[in-house]
Length: 245
Image (cartoon, rainbow, N blue to C red; front, side, top):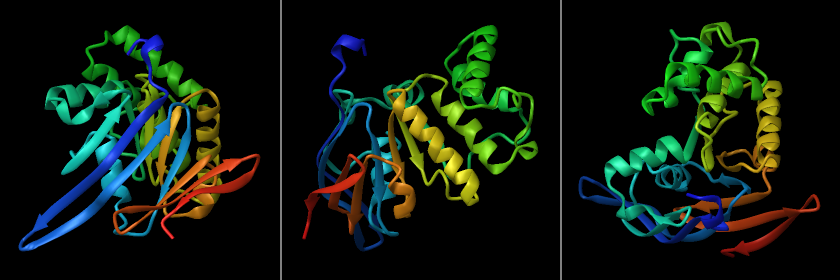
């Protein structure tokens, strides 16, 4: 989308629901959720197991469709898109970072980061240049030819972040990005997210840890498929903007 037509709210969600049918039981994973997320913000989504946060992340990342409600990504109503257009959206507009890294074990860091560009048909020379530059931006310029088993957990997550960023997406989704890391590596990754946010990137991070969530500037808490609390940090102080009571 051209810069002059970009919307202020990169995500708009209205009365979103998601139901799963399991035998004779209907599981209501999301129950009429509504919110907006500003472009360039850093948001943490919190909640216990079964709260709906993973289901919500799947829908926001265009990996799943809602049962009902409206989801607009950068002004586009996602429900109206074909599967091929959704695939394009995931490759161009969305970057994913997962708890388990999801790297190809037998290929180098450089080759892993090149993958989204390969799927996009970018010529080899350009793929290599862009992947190398992105690895350098996450301080892995000296590890481009290392395979995942030759890297620490924190370094592997940095490779995963570089892969998510190489297509310059509109938004970065991170699902428990520090979940498999020791505390020092986790802090390093959170510091990198803070730097990326300072550069203007939009980041939405799922976590179950309050300490991790507080690295964001907004915390949305979910329970039983509903948004129950919305907090914003201003001048180092958390301000409760919404509470379900």
